[in-house]
Length: 245
Image (tube, rainbow, N blue to C red; front, top):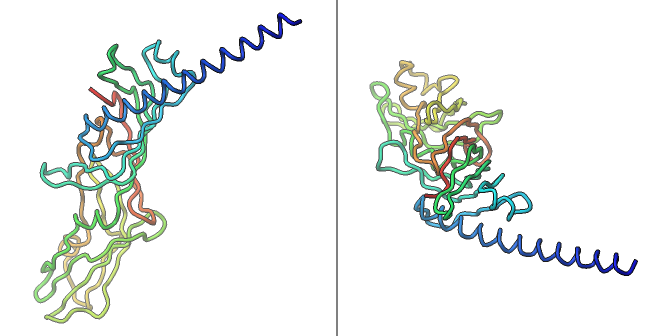
């Protein structure tokens, strides 16, 4: 019995040391991965990297990690024309099946899914915020975007008729979709500007707009989009996503 107790104590101690070593190793790896991702994506701040699964060391020996979670705040994505940028808040991605090279200089995830938010004030930069003529004597421009409820965006438009600004802005509920990496906002109906009859195409030139988003980290792409209280919530996905190298 005494020998058995000693053996159990040794096993517990060794197990505890293994757990400690495993956690130290994973913490070091997370820091290294975060630094490499920051350099690869030219980020202004170090991202959050969390390596899931236990034990970590046996995953390293196998050359593949089951699950890595990445968090990036205020990511500057390309807006489609190569010059402008659009800020994406709180980008979170779950990377599955991450394989890495022997010297850890590169890592690629088999698949990735995640979420992010584009604030309404950021998306507003895409809309026509400068007064534009929609009919003789009538100009209009989008002055605000907000949550319209039930997955819709409330688009607020200000209009001037014959030199007089309408006392109250008009608003319309719009649907938001994503097609081929482009966020599209389209009015479900058309607002009225002081009773003036205006061609639908001219009104939609103001109310409807789109924003191309390129260059997300590792090659992930926009998948779905929906209006939410603080902005447009998007889901992202990708395959063979490059984390480093």
